[in-house]
Image (cartoon, rainbow, N blue to C red; front, side):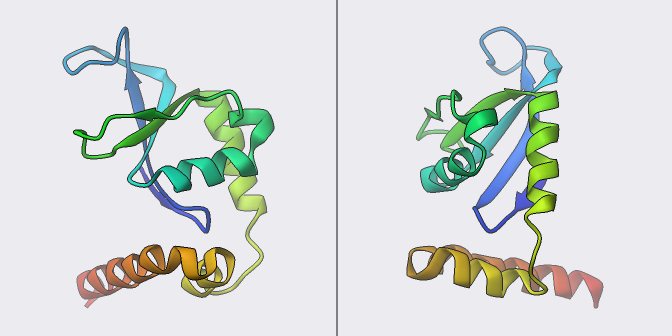
Length: 123
């Protein structure tokens, strides 16, 4: 699943068993949360220190998502519920601009591009 939040952009998928290499069976009880930017995962960990504080951010610059953390599925469920509780705005892109400020300008710009592509799908 792709998840765009005011904290950042994430791709959450089932982790693989064992050492996590390709061709290992998936572990449906463990989630790999991937991000393109380290600050996005850091912001998520800062928002949920009790749930994600002990998760090490693993870096693999040759992967399509350079940064990742691993969490048990029930923990990810709690994070998702917390993100829902954080909803207190009526325009997502504007909230990202307000929340992230100048540091998030590239992310905000990317959100406008995604919006445009998906609007094209609707049309």
